[in-house]
Image 1 (cartoon, one colour):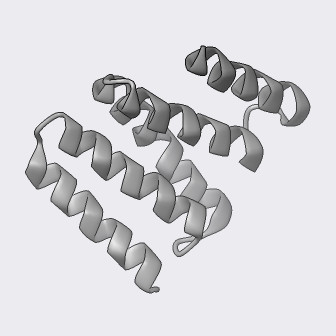
Image 2 (cartoon, rainbow, N blue to C red):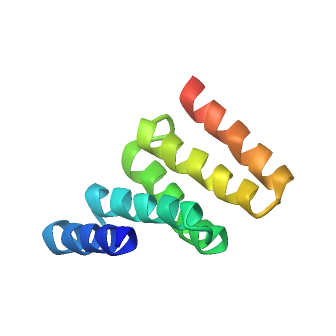
Length: 99
């Protein structure tokens, strides 16, 4: 039920704003967060790999939503047990927020 809600939200964002506008990228970030919470961090990592850099391009290097995306990406790495990658991504998040 929760996944269908996330998918409906993403579909609505795409319908209203298109594929390359902030609300759609934010919905994609939320969907990736959900995938980690659902126990599918590998799928989340693949999505964050696309979403986080695009949010940086759209919003800027120190934007809150870019930092949030990167933090959740780090959580996905941690969920896979790849702690070195997670720590590096948490550090990147700290740099985003400290700017």
